[in-house]
Each structure stands twice: as structure tokens, then as C-alpha cells.
Image 1 (cartoon, rainbow, N blue to C red):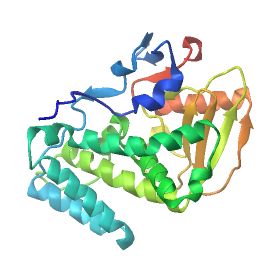
Image 2 (spheres, one colour; image 1 turned 60 degrees about the horizontal axis):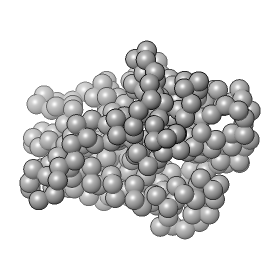
Image 3 (cartoon, rainbow, N blue to C red; image 1 turned 45 degrees about the vertical axis):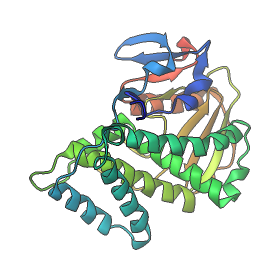
Image 4 (cartoon, rainbow, N blue to C red; image 1 turned 180 degrees about the vertical axis):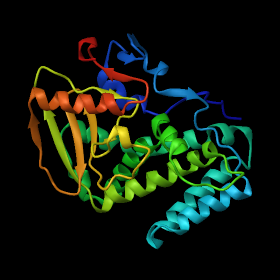
Length: 277
């Protein structure tokens, strides 16, 4: 039997490596600053453990998918089926099945990430690579503890006998596919290049929608998607409906994006240098 992976990361450790020095990353959260191993951050014990859905919860999610555009429903129902499969078999799949799913998504993105670090966006012209890129973006945006809490706290009317925490775990997968579809079919991708003496930081919510107001995040659905994703301390991606073109940022612009990452973080932000946070 496979070994249980107890500490499950909701931010990919490999992605965070550019912010490490001597295998340590600088962290800030809850009023304290410290340096630690990547093993100790952005993770939770059996974070992706799947819980059985009761009949009301299953029908609620089916109804939600049924109201989406027909072109999206096939992949959405496949994700629902996958989630249900994990808790119907053995203890390993229940506790680690969704974690393994995210590992597969990450592995498909690894080569693409290496290209982005070289400022090479040629993968966007290849449908398979663009698809892997798009789904990774959707997953990393929605798989975090921050987004799970957002779904749990969202002011939506739900029937009795439905556990919001249970359906939040499934809805995070559903929304990852929806966002991935937007990235694939509509988004334009630009590089933001930081040649200043300041660094981009990242956080436990590493991909953010710059159009979401923090004060209204539980009260309204944003009308527009514009995603900011720091890739290294000196490079970031910007995804929007309109092509911005690659940009060289000045120090003030870097500071603005860093403040957004800070405001959108759940508990922690990360940097390569303690002075950045």
C-alpha cells in the first residue's frame, strides 16, 4: 500500500524554490518573521482529504454544474466523479487521492514553468501545453486554504443537511476548471519584468485576481478576471482579456503588486530576503 502523505501542500513547493536561499524561505505572518524549509509552509495535515457527500450535497453540486454552459459540463462531471471515487475505495485514496491529482497537474506544468522562467511563452501556441498551463493556473488559484475559506463563507443560500466545508472541497475543483477554461480560451498572457533592486514577493495565495476588492470578496462576484502570478523575485505573469504586452516595472509598480499579494494572502507571504517583507 502506498505511504500516506500527511502534510499536503496547497502551494507547490517546486514553484516556491526561486524564493529560497540555502534551502530556506523568508516568511511573514501573524506579526512574526522567520526563515524555514519549504516543507513547513502552505500546507495542512491531509488538507485534501475527501469526505463522502450525502445525497443533498451531491444533488446540490450536480445542480450547480447543470446551470453552467453545456460545453463545460462534461469536464465538470468528470471532476465530480473523480472526487466521489476517492472516498469510495480505500483509506489512501480518501486521504491522498486529490493530493495525487494535484501532483499530476504540477508535473505537467513543470516544463512550462521552466520556459516561463526563461521568458519563453512559445508554449501558448501549442494546444496541449496551453491546456496544461491553463489548468494549472486554475488549480493553483482555487486549491488554497484562502479560496476554500472563501467558498465556505460565501453568502449563498443552501438547503439544510448540506455541509459547506464538504461542498467547498468539490467546488474548488469545479472552479479550477472554469478558470482554466477562461485562461485557455480568452486570456492574453504578458510578462512583468522586475529589473529593480526590489523583489516580487509571493504568498499562500500566489495567484490573485487584481480586480477583486478585499473588503467585498464575500459579497460580490468580480466582473472581470485579471490574474497576477509572481514566478520569481524578478518575473511575473499577468493574464487578462486584453493584451498588455511585456512590461518592465519600476520600483513603485513592484511595490503595488507586492501590496496586492499581501492583502490577498491568507496567513503568510514569502520572500527571498527578509527586508522585502
